Amino acid sequence: MSLDLVAAVDIGGTKVAAALVDGDGTVLARAQRPTPAREPAPRVLAAVTAVLTALTADPRWPRVGAVGIGSAGPVDARTGTVSPVNIPAWRDFPLVAGVRATTGALPVTLVGDGSAIAAGEHWRGAARGHDNALCMVVSTGVGGGLVLGGRLHSGPTGNAGHIGHISVDLDGDPCACGGRGCVERIASGTHIAAWAQASGWQPAPGTAPTAAAVAADARAGHPVARAAYDRSARALAAGIAATATLVELDVVVVGGGVSQAGDVLFTPLREALHTYAALPYVRGIEVVPAQLGTDAGLVGAAAVCHSGSDTFLIPGQAGN
Image (cartoon, rainbow, N blue to C red; front, side, top):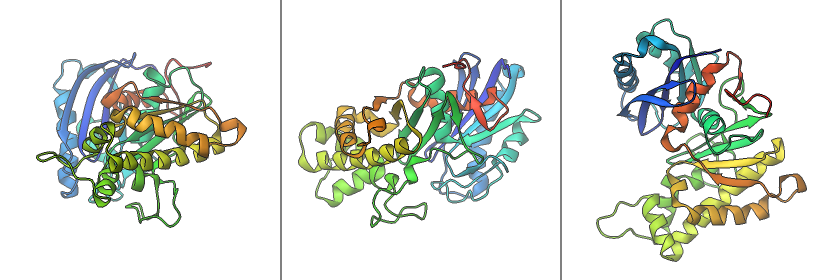
């Protein structure tokens, strides 16, 4: 499908963003609102409606040919509904129908936010040129998406590649998803900070107890802060190794707020992969930082609109 402009929507636990994205993956206009994640379902939808309404006021709106949505999940692309772990009021919520109330008859494509990020990074980011990639976002949660054989593999429901809810500790703490010992329950920014505090770390006076604050102290050599990031890195490495063993990967792209810790995260992550990725065909996987930053989900939500199938061919990547 050849599209001039796509209206892309990125829905997460902290913000709802929307943008007009052209056929080259360039963001031309954007709008953003905080996600009222703990409020009733209609209030959350109102944030989505607000960012889309802002885009419809742009003079370029008549050129929009489709709407792409990357949402925190689980999602169900078959029914157009979402049940994000981090938005409690949305359970089997009819998101696509809610979006169509603003966008009218435009076709709407829904995928999980991890799949959207994977599509974006493969189209215009760090996974470009790689046929087999796992793209992860490590932030307040941990999500991911897969590109296999040069195509985004989102699965029948749009959730494939959700590495955050692979269990890497069978006796670990309960996760919000209902599982136990999930990658997200150990490696997310929220749980990095919580584990560090429980282990005796305290932020500097006047500083919030965030993963960024832990990273700053880890960089300065604080032993508990470093241990918190080492623990996160091991969980990520175990999840990556399990995924690579199943599907074989060329590259792993890691983005999200926690990735901004840089070598504090990436050095122990690469070291831990030597332990967990032991089989010959998973050794030497390249692990790189994401390139698109907070725009990855928006660019990827636009990318998935360029195909009408469940397994999306990334624009401009045919024949890799």
